[in-house]
Amino acid sequence: MFRETVTHAGGDSKGTARESHALMLLRRARNSGYAMEATITGGASIRWTRVDHSTRTLVARAIALDPETPVGDLDDTTRAHLALIDLGDARYLVRADGRAITTADGEIGALAAARLRARRLVAVDDRGRVRLTMAARLGLLAHDHRQAGGGTDGFAMCSCGFTVHGPTGEAADEILRNHRQTVTARFVDSITAAYAAAISTTR
Image (cartoon, rainbow, N blue to C red; front, side, top):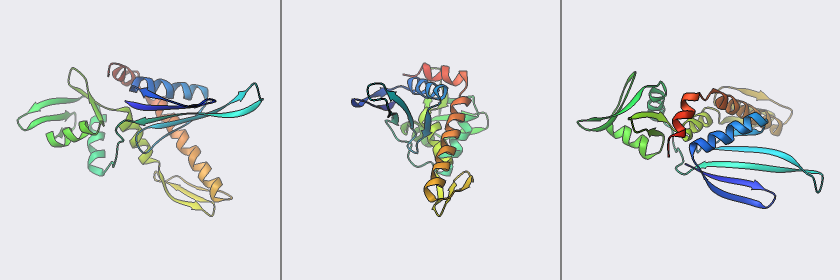
C-alpha cells in the first residue's frame, strides 16, 4: 500500500493507493512521457507540466507515491534474499522452526522470512506463492541508482557506475537525474503481465 499525494492547481490531495493502482499510474506516466523516478524509500515520483488555458502558462503537476512501510536499509543479506525470491517459484511453507520461504535456488529461514514480511518487502498469496512487493522492487532500483559521488565541478556519479561530466555541477546532476528517470521507465516497461496479475489480486 502506498500513500498517494497529487499536486494540482488547488494544492495537494492525499489518499492511498494499492500496488495495482500505483502500477497503473506508472504505466500511464510512461505512456504519456512524464518524468518519473524511483525513490530510496520504495516509492516513486511522477512529474509533468501542462498548459493552464486561463493564463496560458505552463504549470507543474506531480504525483508522489510513498510506501506505508519504507523499505529501509537493503543490506547485502536482504538483497540476496530478495534476489532469490525474484528468480520465481518462491513458496511460503511451514517448517519445524516456523514459516520459511523456499525458492528454486535455496531456502530462506523462518526468522529472515518473518523479517521480510514484517518490512512489507514480500507478499504471499492464498496459495503460498511469494513475490517481491512493488515497494521492494522500486527500492532496489533506487538503491542501485543513487548518487554515489560528485555533484561539483561538473562531475556526478551513479552507484551503478554511470559517470557524467557537465559544464557545471548542476548540469551534471541533471544528466544523472535523467539517467535515473530512464532506468525507472525501463523498469516499468519490464513489468510482466504475470506480475501485474499477481498484484491485482493483492488487497
